[in-house]
Amino acid sequence: MPTLEIRDLHVAVGDKEILRGVDLTVRGGETHAIMGPNGSGKSTLAYALAGHPKYTVTKGEVLLDGEDLLAMSVDERARAGLFLAMQYPVEVPGVSVSNFLRSAITAIRGEAPKLRDFRNELRSKMEALAIDPSFAQRNVNEGFSGGEKKRHEILQLELINPKVAILDETDSGLDIDALRVVSGGINRFRSRGDTGVLLITHYTRILRYVAPDFVHVFAGGRIVEEGGPELAEKLEAEGYEAYVKAASV
Ligand code: ADP
Ligand code: MG
Ligand code: MG
Image (cartoon, rainbow, N blue to C red; front, side, top):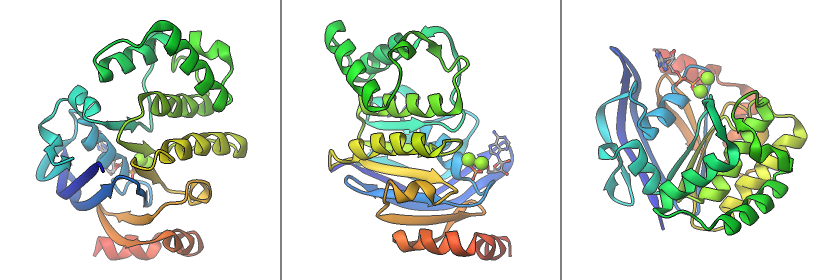
């Protein structure tokens, strides 16, 4: 089973320390939700794991299947089985969704999938995500609606089929129908049984569809509370205020 181990992770942007000692282990077959208020450092964790150059790890370690993730380049992290869907995906001008996805798969698997196999796979996965076939010919993220961006992220997830997926606010800006479709994609990925999911959100809504095994509350750049799915219900009822106060003293 794949395992992502985050130990005492400290991350800074410039001189500002944002993550202040995060400890978290995600094993294959587990779904972890990270919840927390705006500005608590959730996306910083995702960016640091992705290897974004702006986010400097100042202390701690991250192991993927026992290998030092932080020593890997961004590409190596993806090849090692880590998948990141970002909160603000970038535009890739002049590159169609279809070509983008085929290149991504080629880069990760080390060989290009046969065109016909790829087209068939793409078609069936798009259908499952209720994506119009014409979408494959559009340029990546150019003029995508919020919902299209999220479906495209989950399409990538299902095609790339990584070991561990980190999904940052995959639920933001989705209407109920889109949320169901996107959650369905995450659940298909989970149904493989050995995949790890780190689901970052500040709403409990998505957790009704993608039931987490563990819930972690982020405040002030660290995990301040952990529990099972019932913790999400408690947060829904009580909000984050108590945790924010405790973290700021
Ligand atoms: P969350 O995702 O929980 O809303 P973020 O990780 O986006 O929180 O942000 C945590 C804190 O780090 C905020 O105070 C934010 O302003 C700061 N921060 C994050 N990324 C940057 C950046 N690239 N430059 C400057 N400050 C940043
Ligand atoms: Mg935010
Ligand atoms: Mg964020």
